[in-house]
Length: 344
Image (cartoon, rainbow, N blue to C red):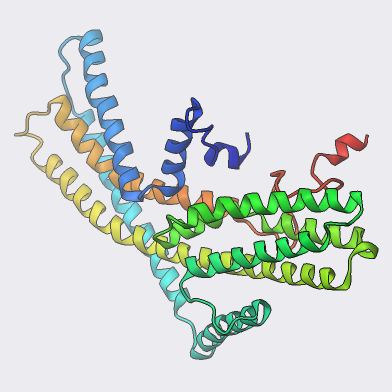
């Protein structure tokens, strides 16, 4: 099963795989990271607390607790101090790296302005929206509009050209439509990045250039120009997605640092108090499990953030014109990944 199938496929509205796929997507991508960590923590507490207590009583009678509790909670307390110091150090390095000289910062701002100006010249518009979801919708609308224009220009083309063009346009329209459906519900930067994540622009650019070179003699001049504009739009889309992804990563690490501070303080205070008053506390099973759960909360929080960042990074790894993905989307006959096997 590919990455896209394992995360995005929902198996239809009534398929048995739909609930599992939606849960997996929520766990990896769409769920709020604090809620994801909290859900995993509650599930672990119920498993170890309730099920573990029942199993222990069945196998060993009345459970008793000795000094192994101290060593376990002490290890978790030390781990929290270490985790907190590591994340603070990484965050300090990240902030220091963001502190750029004035000329470099000016160049970054100018590059964004120049990007918008060039895009306006390509789509022949006076102004493109600064809001990222609206900008992506505008790009996708222009891409589909140019694809429709090319389709209408080549309605009377020969059968080979029509077959390749129909295959390409079908893949392009499908991916663009799926992205637009997700953009309708996008309310944050992470929603935008997730919506753009499965848009396989590297494959689309490669397929379109192959179609253009293979049927160069059969393409009218105006159609060839429209294909050139479509290639430019796909390149602008790739650039915008990479830029929005960098903004998302910066925001994600900032949120992680903030949430980890609150979580670590509570975890350290709880575990330290437990160890300090251990002699007078009734070390019951549920008290010990509760303290362990609180001590594990910072680790689960970091894990939830790392899961999403790694999933996004892996599925948006642009090849800069090279096709790195093994997903057979946007392919036309003659250059799909499986053609080598069929040619043998």
